[in-house]
Image 1 (cartoon, rainbow, N blue to C red):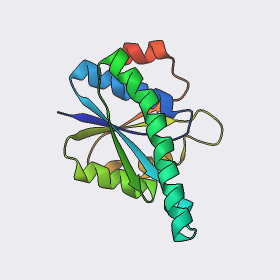
Image 2 (image 1 turned 30 degrees about the vertical axis):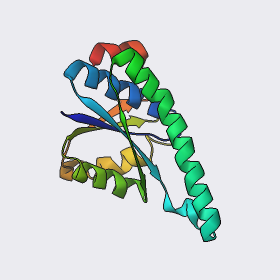
Image 3 (image 1 turned 120 degrees about the vertical axis):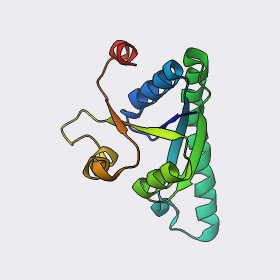
Image 4 (image 1 turned 135 degrees about the vertical axis):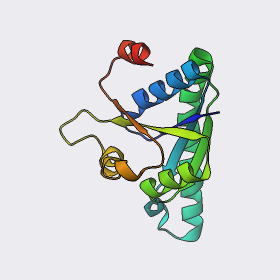
Amino acid sequence: MRKFLVVLDDSRECLNAMRFAAMRAAHSGGGVAVLAVIPPDEFNHWIGVGEIMREEARERIEVHFEVFAKWMRDKQNVDPELVIREGEPMKEIMAQVMEDPEIGVLVLGAASDNKGPGPLVTALSRQAGTLPIPVTIVPEDISKERLEAIT
């Protein structure tokens, strides 16, 4: 089964990326893998404190994921999987793509403010010609109706 890999973070543009991935998966008989990356700099503390912070980060991710997962299951009939990795986001995204041969498309949300589309979109667009899979970039400001029409 082909999977759409979408990155879960705290950005506003993440919402439309999740919607797009779920709708495309539903319409194409695919699946959704949701990747959350915990940056390593969050745990540069004493070992015990770092472990507590790591566990709290995982719990926050799981709660955040469950909101999207419930919508995907209820509205799109898609049961997403959650993958949590620790490290630099770009490296972890590429590692996940290489480790899971079912991933066929990477879906990212692009911010609409004047600061640019976001660090992941910027970094991946520089590497676009060397990526092993296509990347779909979903604008933050695209309407739900427009998303439904194009998926």
